[in-house]
Length: 479
Image (cartoon, rainbow, N blue to C red):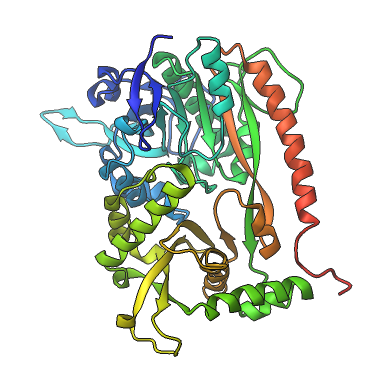
């Protein structure tokens, strides 16, 4: 197989296309996808011929005000500063196998400036999609390594691929943001999505990408994508449906574990909803942490000093080194930029080991031994990173789960997403929920095999979820 090598963030090498002038911004700026003037798109303020799509190779080429106006859900991971920090810290980029290739939908009008009797057209951003050209599958959390191995075993290139996702972040959310003028008109929205899919497919062909993936898209977008299908641009279908010969988007499901706030007033109030045995177990685990002389502080904003960030970053690296054999995908600069730019959305639960057995709160007599980093929006708490430099009984459960539940209750947040995987979360009140991904395989001989795999995987996840629900620790209505 004709391929170049690229060293990823963890030191491994994966097959990769040669980064070339194809991805230079000036080339991309002229690479526009005009909407057919005979299209059925009809909007009150938008004419069909006024919409176009372009791609940019850096987020800074998009105005922050435009991005924030469209990605207005408040979720931290689609925030401009969250994504910009990843790029500016070089945690995301061509050398890391995450080449930004963001999609921009523009509404072009003649309402711009007039100079010497010439009207400079005005371009208003009305749609955005975070996109990356990937040369590996690290940091995605919907695993397709077996697919890549199948391709490579038959001397076929699986990489590069195009993904619509948030780097290193397994949290569902907006993946296509549209202006209200588009989103409120269902017919217009449907046709715009068809336009987007056609542009993605054209880019895929131009750049010789093996497939396009949309990972962790929010549930409310799935029915929309299923309704907005054209025979010409690929159809999104449930992978358990009858196989078809035309290109189609395959739907994939996975399982995460989320805790839901049922109006609890305190952690003890939450415990009352559990069976006596589970309640007793959690109390013992928390008591054991206290008995080991460990105290906790919730730090936010300027309380998270540079020294605290440096200590937490060390914990982060130690965790990855122990679990994966590398030092993680992120560097200190990324965490520091997040702390400066997203301070109001971040809480660090820091664990300190007391140097004596008394109840002194003197920070000088304590050492920070662990930390759990949380992000939040108006409704959800997200547990993202954790690390420690010493092992203590139940410290991980306390810092990452129980303190997170307390945070969600105190802030009246309805959901706590503690991250990918972790069946052990079920015994602590986290319920199995479905997450979604969508895939378009570009002229692949493995399409039928992958579709069959997804059918079987979906069935397995259905049974798995049913079994886990039986293990939830909550009291029955009769108790």
